[in-house]
Length: 102
Image (cartoon, rainbow, N blue to C red; front, side, top):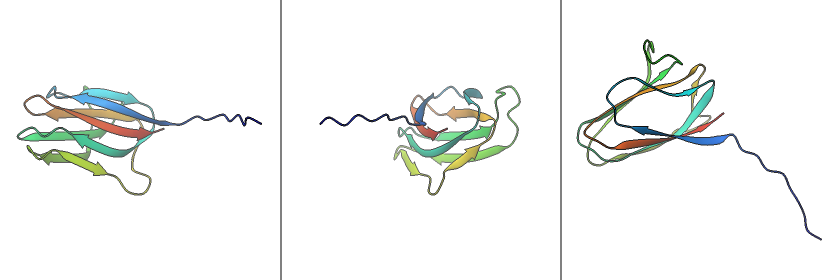
């Protein structure tokens, strides 16, 4: 007998490129559960709880890292973003992958 199941997941990811300006990554509520960044000298990642890249408000998360890169698992339920995610990734090239639920 073959068992059939239905599976759905609210897990996803956002690929963030080094732009150096506020950029809308996602609208709507979600939780950031992990962050991985390519090692580039003097990289700075800033995340805002906002759906407006022109006026994102207060910073929720800031990470400064260099050529060693970054790999962070956010414990518990992750970092909650009620409105969406606006990011600012500064550095010379590079990218960051953020894993989200929601």
